[in-house]
Length: 251
Image (cartoon, rainbow, N blue to C red; front, side, top):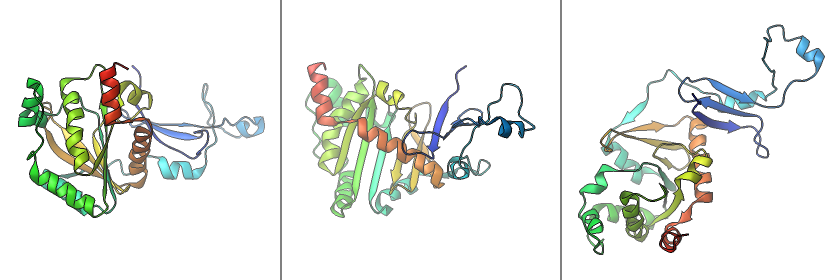
């Protein structure tokens, strides 16, 4: 069975070597880098076993990107405390949306309009949420999202493509990314918000696709992994208007 690997980080900004990855199921750490080839050096490795290959990595690579605090209990917060993060942050709030369905969207009048094929009326939809986004945007805070979409898109993703008009009107920047591209980029298969590039809120959904809790992640190396995913997703994603145009044109 193939491993589910997560890229933790690299000590090189050029060629990605050496690097550290982590097995999400076993917790094992995979390190790759230049091999140790000098015979005299290899001879000094008295515990080198058959089939093992010695590699050379900088000490800081393991300090920066090796797993830490594996025994610490997750920092779980409720949804009310989660809501407060959207006024407490200082500069940027950014989300990756990877799920194929969100239960909350199916209960809204706008979703009912969309599925009936009538024009969606966003006026008056979620007025408190919209007002808060406008207030925070007026303080020069920036909101962004990248939404991962299957091909062909599900009804829910098409609805969120329409929903982007409302979100952008209150200050969010919305991009879309094909799931195939997201998989090639090895983006996390998780929904998360990252605030000010220093705090990650990992969203936990139940089997009914309802958001039930949020895990806060502050450990710098772990936050960096999500920041790297954010940058990659943003680089390859397409502004929602352009995505919608290509979708309508069959591109």
